Length: 447
Image (cartoon, rainbow, N blue to C red; front, top):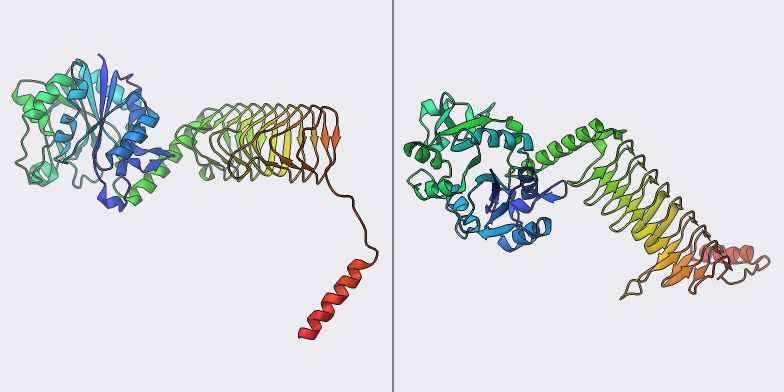
């Protein structure tokens, strides 16, 4: 059966105390709703519909950045979850598969759980996801009769007997799209909140002779994000999950609790990650690479056998070749570093191509920005760049060429040449002592 996702992401999230729509707050450098999309993607959905509301333009832009094929619809008035899901009707016109309703602020529903819902859907018209709550609190209760779900009752509308139930509603459900919207049309808002509840479709379905059931997942999967404290707790859960996954797939984390991953971090087997490393979005580290302590990586690719850090920063567009060395206090941005090249100390390489086997000395800077435009520096293979060289782009340094330490290189250096661009040293005999004596005497007169 083909699947479609309806992701509800219209709430303002007033408890976040933020001008940003709640679903745009991030876990692992990705908006909350993206995590729900990722779980749903395992169902290979034919269509994905995101229901936005507060900050709809910003939510739409973020959604399109992650999935250009997504459909974003707007719930102009927040009249409840049933009303929100109904906004997807036109976007799913003609779709005859199953619709899965997910929540943009519930990021940890697993692919395994969604598959279990799909399996249960083969035997029931509606499948609801529930969990056994350690503290049921104000969750909606699932009223079961055997494996049949009779209805879902919200806490504020529940009787004392119903409030004693510990099997609680996550909000996630699955149903064939056509009857889902028909059932929503039959819901009413004569409840304590005055809203159209999506949960009411279960009782309506039973009244029509349709079958409903609920399957259980772990309570941890249903964790919602409503406050900054929830967001911090969710980030911790995400990081723990990614660390465990890394260790299980053959990656060495020397101090796991100090390593922070992004949503899309990819690391190969036998890579070593030292303490206090932070991965921003868009990072791939190949097998056998080593990321040394206190390094920060974002939007870059580190090839097999390369070493980065300690205290290195790789920015977007950094491509580090096989067995290359990026050392302490080196920053690389929008640059391709060739196989076996070494840039070991106190250096900035931006908008550049560094050839295989080239050595870049300490304190080197590619001067890539003229105040308006960025320019590129190209250094050939097996070149040697002396310490404290300023390479004023655009400039080319040929294969096996050298620059003298302290040089400011403003013209191309042909292959094999040595470029020295600094003034001649002139030693003034005794001048240092005479100058210091004069300065000390001036200071003594002031005192």
